[in-house]
Image 1 (cartoon, one colour):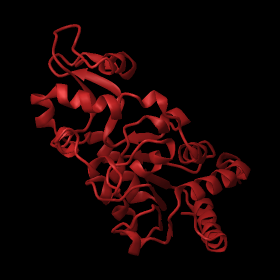
Image 2 (cartoon, rainbow, N blue to C red; image 1 turned 45 degrees about the horizontal axis):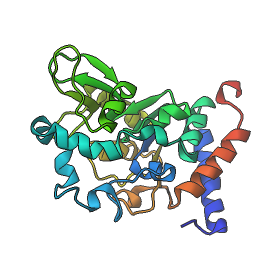
Image 3 (cartoon, rainbow, N blue to C red; image 1 turned 90 degrees about the horizontal axis):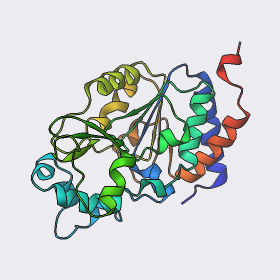
Amino acid sequence: MAEKEAVFAKKFEILKALIKNSRSTVVLTGAGISTLSGIPDFRSSSGVYATTWKSYQVEEILSISFFKHNPEIFYAWAKEYWYKLDDYKPNTVHTALALLEQKGYLEGLFTQNIDMLHKKAGSRKCYEVHGSAEHHHCTNCNAYYSYHWVAPIVLTGQVPRCTECGSVIKPDIVFYGENLDGFTLSRAYEMFNHAQLCLVLGSSLVVQPAASFPAYTVHRGAPLVIVNAQKTSYDGSATLRFTDLQQFSEALEKYLVALEPRKLLV
């Protein structure tokens, strides 16, 4: 639900000053932002985790041990949730953040999402903390396969198998029980530690270690801005908190369109 215009406008004026004064702005996004594109989130009352799938808990399906023993069940579930991503388009959150980067006001964007929408919107400084459905590899010989090669196979109800050795192909998504990419983590710790402004959009800040990224910024005394419908454990540390992603992103995009690119500023 959108905030009252007077309340929102007052907070947004403060945000504009924070953006202009920051020489190192870092953003963390979660599943909430993709709901505006029609993709369900995970942890809300109507999210993916709220119900079972054919008697299986979705969190169980998304564990690496389960995938190794039951790839056919994973792909049957993923057929509906992860292999129709071409049906979804970037929304105003994605395009506003791409514009923030293009105007020279964004150092890094870290997303918990695997849906490729940030890159589709034009973001280049994007780090996919939990991996991406864009890339796949053979679980045996490590041969590479793209999303567009794998998706048609999954949509026919088959388990994709390597053309080289016949083994199961796995998406480059971090399953429960797997470690996150070391390079991405090191970049996150570095950027959030040195950030002069941290924006968190559409994340419940529950899943670790991404949930702890904003703490590195807050502990240095830099401002934190949270935009999320549900409350988070960091709300008390936030300089600003907005509750409506659509309202926020539309205002941000409108502001950025008129904002002079940083490279032209004296």
